[in-house]
Image (cartoon, rainbow, N blue to C red; front, side, top):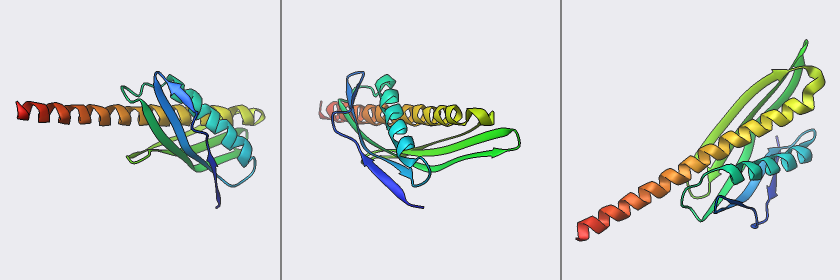
Length: 148
């Protein structure tokens, strides 16, 4: 399975005062790959605008679709997606969802699933950034107290 890497310009989005740069968004090769990649990139930007990254001024993130399936069995269309996000130079987070609906609503289901995993991964990455900054602040405070 081949992957396509899409690089995103540094003038990304301002998330509550935090500049969020998506270093890369990878989507597996397959049917409608470019459309999915473009849609996912937009969803990630939108989710980042709403996320609270705490005091961070700038954050560099990346995302990779590990699995994306969209199949009809009988009268149910099921879409599953697993997305792995990473704070560049830090930890990763995983978001997975599987959702079903009417076969006639395949495109809407795919969009809904991508939106849900994008929101989930950005929320988790924002939490990681906030926790990392809090730990850094606490360590600085502890050093300052030790000097006094």
